[in-house]
Length: 541
Image 1 (tube, rainbow, N blue to C red):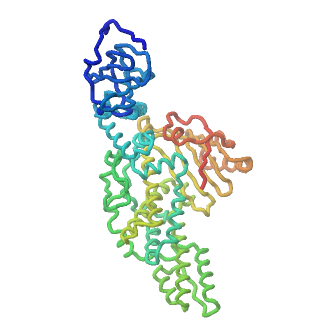
Image 2 (image 1 turned 90 degrees about the horizontal axis):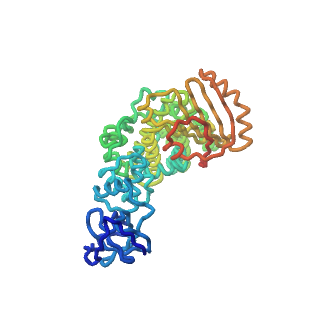
Image 3 (image 1 turned 120 degrees about the vertical axis):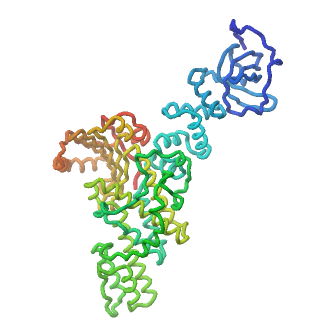
């Protein structure tokens, strides 16, 4: 091993005279800053940043110089000896000094993991001080199975770091989020788990204020967080379980106010039950009457159901039928399931008419959030905190909460349209950061990506760019058949866009190529979407 003596430090120090530090003061992986005082074969005497002297053993032969300043990593430590690995590829520089200073002031162990944390904070232009570092250390410890990059992304985007939001973020990043499927799972549980005692309660909840035509007159979801308010630190590291409505308040940055959650079951049960004509389309009412006719079995004719009956009157009507008890129960279950399904379809799915009035989409999510909260509260009041119905209601509610927080900086929305309208799944991404728009001022230019899954067309990616009254539109399809079908109808789109007062400057159809990356192409997108990028999605309903 060669030793280079610098003139100012051309002195010999006996290792035996250097104060040793107890090996238990060091941990494996710890990173130390030190100046080399002396070298004897594999033993090295160094002065640490805090002035302490340490004698240690190098893990391999390497050319070093007395007076050289660099980083060492602790490879092993005991009460007798410390083994160090020189980190020559990370020779000391001003950035290292800053990172070590921050870690030292925060009282945090200097190791590769914590150095990486500081580096990531600096690279994202996030605060790097004792408070923020300790906060991140607590989060990293609490969510030790979550990649550091994910936690930092959530903090940077003001998404509360909870177990549920971590899961929803992963689903969002991997194109696995599906609000419509959540609602379908909930609907299935309502049909198969709800007892006779709770079915009417669920129908009332689903239909309470459900009419989209009257949303402007209704007061809904008063407790949604104010988009202008930042997410409180207490919320970032706070409770993971957001289903306990009694402990939720606006002051804590949570979702729904206590005033809006007082005794929902008592309020609902005192209301008059809705009439069937409000719930059931004529086709469903006819289907029910056809079913009723099969139960008559050629005996005395059963009078048909009418739309002006209430749910209570329906109960009395079934009870008064001249059928044996088993047939009555079977008929009651059949009718109730049809009513529940109609109530779900009517109240928890969007109509395409909402696209003509975008404010209805916002009101839709306010309403569906309230309905889910009431279902959860109702089940809790009945002591039914487990089961698929509760699980799917909580999951759908948490999905809306995650979407709400995401929309503080971005514009992203899932549009769960009714199946009868042929649209299986739909998502809208708008490529603007709301915080940047506030600082730069509004612009009439907007770029968006609309993802659609149609029953007959399969998957479509539609990129739209609008500048004033000029529109550019590009379709990306899966195969030649879809390519041909879309091209055949482009002239209709031209006319439709023109009828809205816009001029279509360019429209084209291409096959999909690249895969859309949620983080790189949406959440961390730095530049304006000036050019069309070809996106495709792997997720299917």
